[in-house]
Image 1 (cartoon, rainbow, N blue to C red):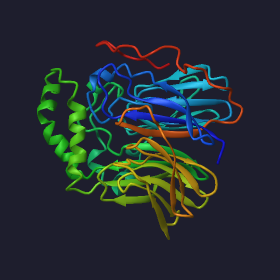
Image 2 (cartoon, helix red, strand yellow):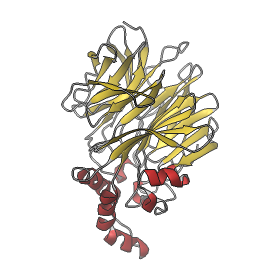
Image 3 (cartoon, rainbow, N blue to C red):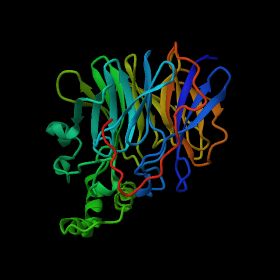
Length: 384
């Protein structure tokens, strides 16, 4: 069995106010056990978004290299050095509902689903690059999103009280490096019909905003939930997008008719590998689309999320019920449970999986120096 140490992030779907909403665990793959568990610092905006499915809760993507590890939550990134000292905390008004991240030598790529942005931040917090599908009319046309190019503006996507009714148009939730550039997962591209349902329900709210009246904080989450309800009778899609180092973005994979977002797109040799969360399976397909194979992931529901290479054509995959890690061998067509994340909530779900780089010290008992702060009505976090 591989002796790799793993960092595994989690999110707890239904969390009472004041209770921790997710953790980061250190796992021994060889011993098949959890070595340490660290509850995450909570978002200062959490009290303003009561979305029971997730909202601003939980730990998000994890990435690292030989010099540092970065752990993300919904609106910021925590940077740790090889001795596990926290050496940075990065945030930005566009980083609303952070999902997966990618560490590179000069900075970290971040997917932020609320703003539809893929952003690269330097280690000093400087913005090195931002990109959105809104910059590419041809891509917007292919995704049937031309009507959404001019969205309602928002000056801070971290604050749910400021979000427009229609946001998170493509649910950009994964970023990975490949030889040509970046691979992005557009986890859930809603149909035009479901977007119109959101806009129709928001007409009273839009009028209130024009009149300068304050609305209830729950508005964005409750309206966003309508998108997934509408997917039961309209067509929504998962789309894999290549953002090359040079040239326009293009679609490299697609799955129509989904009812929940897919996650975690990777390039593996001459194939693409992704979590088909809608179909409860791990999928591998040729880059040219000439063949596809898959392995089912158990659970009730599995809500497949979290993906990491594990040698050969094997991958680590996470699940929700139970919250567990599985070793999936795509050549053998097998799925073996590595371990269950015991001691958590029945509503806990694996989010991210990342191997601890070689040369890192033994981690401390407390990964963060202090516990979560209670949110207040005048919270406005700044760029670190």
